[in-house]
Length: 142
Image 1 (cartoon, rainbow, N blue to C red):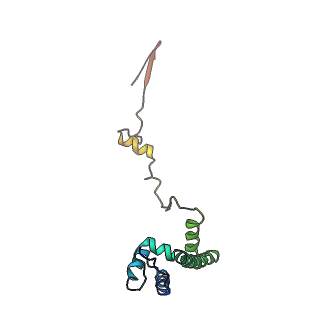
Image 2: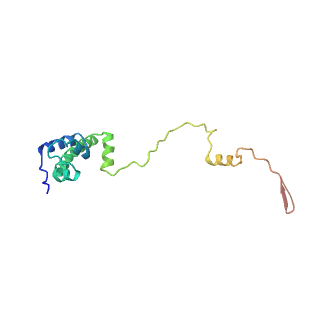
Image 3: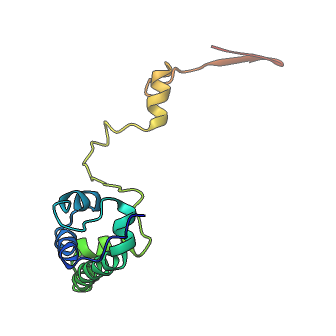
């Protein structure tokens, strides 16, 4: 039976430095293999140092979160947006950018006019004069 690894203050110190440096768990494990009693697997690492890892991460998350909230409350737009996205459930679904352009009313065409023109109906053509003549109940127009 293989004896369990003992808790090591040197390993703990290395873990603390890695967490404060933003190093991921797998890289952390690989970088400590030169230390005596260093865990070789993720499960062993969490079994021995899991509560310490979570406590340190919570401290950092709390410190950063406090700074973001303080900046958001002071009016910093980026911090406000970050907070609302992560904690407020807010998500911008669409950004509409409206640009006002001056158009010449003589050249402005409605969608209907454009479609009618494409279909071969020229709505701007002068209407032909129609003449009708009626004899009794029979009318003819030309």
